[in-house]
Length: 220
Image (cartoon, rainbow, N blue to C red; front, side, top):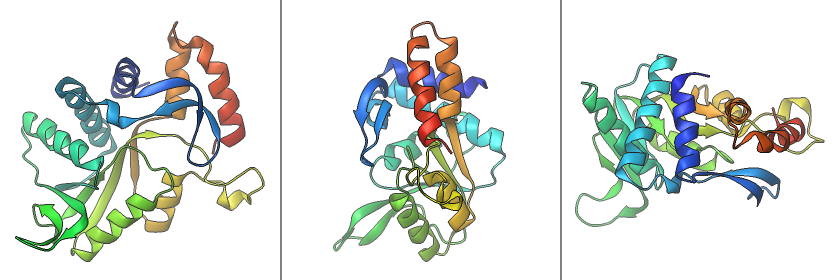
């Protein structure tokens, strides 16, 4: 496991963004773990998280020149990421969107640097059903920009559809977005990394069997 993945997972456990137990997901599945990026709610946590994002993005070798954060969770993540890059000597423009268009002042749904002609890195926490990310991709395209890649914190690496779905449909939300839009999806860590991390941790070793069972049923 690379250092940024281990740092991210340890941080997520420390701030309880990553919790273990029995959780009912929006999909109706009963999951042995739950990820909530809203728990990265301090300067230190966001700074460390942004450093993990930057390491994962740099390792992937993505060529981009603007960072875009979809409302709402993507906004602080993208903001923290451009600050992390500024500390590394790279000053990147930032943009994000509003959920509702502003009808006064500058108006519109976009805030920040202009997107037109840019190679945009979209930053969010997870891709669950893919709806929010698809909306962000459409918004970026309508502004005259291209999407260089999508960066997320955690890839659950589980199928969108149930056990009876055809093999062609048994892909994850991240895989579906990448396939349908021809855009690379970069995750700081995935379920496979979480399994390795749990196996190396004395406090999480007991969770590994339940994680393995969940992957065996829903993994892609």
